[in-house]
Amino acid sequence: MTNLPVIVGFGGYNAAGRSSFHHAYRRTVLDSLSTEKIRSTIVSLASLMKLVRYENGVYIDTQEEALTADQVVEKYRSTIEENTLIRRIHEEHFDVNKVPSTKDMRLESDHASEFTLRRRELPNPVPANWLIEAQDDKTVKVTISGGVSLKMESFREFDVQSAGILPTGFKPQDEYNSRFHPRGLQLAILGASDAINSLGITWDELMSKVNPDEVAVFASSGVGQADDAGVGGYMQARLKSGRPTSKQMALGLNSMPADFVNAYVCGSVGTTGATTGACASFLYNLRLGVDDIKAGRHRVVICGCSEAPVTPEVMEGFAAMSALGTDERLAKLDDAETADHRRASRPFGENAGFTMGESSQYFILMDDALALELGADIYAAVPDVFVNADGFKKSISSPGAGNYVTMAKAVASAMSIVGEEAVKQRSFIQAHGSSTPQNRITESMIFDKVADTFGITNWPVTAVKAFVAHPLGPASGDQLANTLGVFADNLIPGIKTTEKVADDVLDKNLDILLQDRPVAMDVAFLNSKGFGGNNSTATVISPTIVEGMLEKRYGDKAFADYVAKRDKTRQQASEYDAKASQGDLNVIYNFGSGIIEDHEIIIGKDGVQIGQFVNKISLEFDNPYQDMV
Image (cartoon, rainbow, N blue to C red; front, side, top):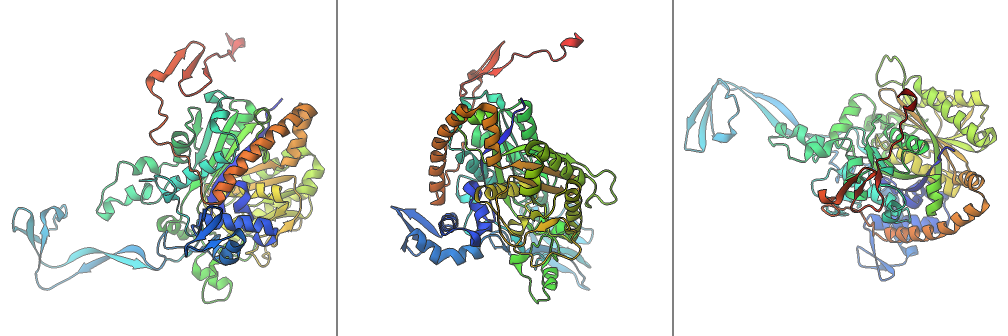
């Protein structure tokens, strides 16, 4: 039997809020929800955004007014809607009207110029037309004959002023002792904590059921940690007359979203890895986890990505490629004087480029046998993730053949598992949907051709980037979190920022949803296209289908026993959700505690025993090359 990789916990944060228990998903379909779900979504966001705090059974707002949950909705819903999803970049990130820059200047004079400097401020080498005279031990007088070149601090208005940024008022750095951590790693700590807390099973209980090396963490970021605390800081330090710190280089690496989880969240000594595939990075890491669980190499895998690329430097790099939607181009789309920042991302419509975002998404996978044993709540299964390159390319950033292959494989795989009818009648696509003119044509062409091949008509297509933008590496993690919400609520988010499907979109066999669609789905296809020819498509199966598969594999009694244990898991998980929705995120950050000392490691011929772990790491191996020796 092949192990079935099932998702048993998930969490994270993006422009829509907290991912666990479908809160972020529900922000994208807010107007289509029941009154009860609207209430829970708004109250959770109000707590996250520090608009209210929970005390003694009531919510207290910043004016010290006591409110019920319904009163929180009435008072703050419009504020929350305005300050979530894609919008104008908040000054918490940077001032879009005053982005720091420098100007090169050449000053010429017919007369000698004099000024004093501290000796340590002299340039090296001293220009030939500078005469230096000592004033004292620390100061010199400089006389310049002729001209001098200067770099002067300057400011400019940024061309791109919209992004998918975290809900206003939610500051990840304030949720734990985050000193020196780049924003992307702050989000990694919070996202992985949310995922683990969502399990409803303690990490110690989970580890008592598996060997320490049967756990893996695969996570990364696309461009690394690009702000001042990471790569951006040490690369700019000397040019800004500063110097790098001892932490910037290490914390800037794109493997840190996995390394931080191992070191400070779950304390794993199992396998770790960070695969990068540009905008498809999350699916690349998910593929590692899925393949390892199917092969039996691991029983528990944490897969994720975390990235905070809303910085002037990263955004300007993409803008230089004409990849981002500038304010000027957005305004031109609407024949308006100003850009509509809320509708900056318009997948499959008349659009002007993608919108940058920030996100952290982590998912906990188990093999099906372990999930049944523990009574884990199963949100979906991921039987396959496919990755293919484009072959020879004229432009490294242009799309190519690989995505045809990944989509076709994903559909064929799903049909072999759940049957043709389920795929034809009850599947949908989470499109890459980057909101570029090139993407809307090429991706729709792929979907339409695959649909035609497999006899699929009116294939529903959505794109979560319309709401949370494009955070690079974690983008397909946003897609997966949104998909789990679709399975839970039977409601596909429409691409509500797009008023009309563009005329050049090929959609003969597609149903590109522009409004929320209430419908039950059994299968989702997550599609991701990355610069350089990094294409990936994942097949995701609903929990309804998975439960039927498990009951058939293990029998009625074993499945009934599982359901009984799952009730307890759900109760424990709901207790975390209730507290998190009231502002207590229970961030897991074990710095300086639980460190494994050398004397706690006992090596025997049959295995390695490490102090804090119940089970050993086995050293008993069969020879796989028996026929060769």
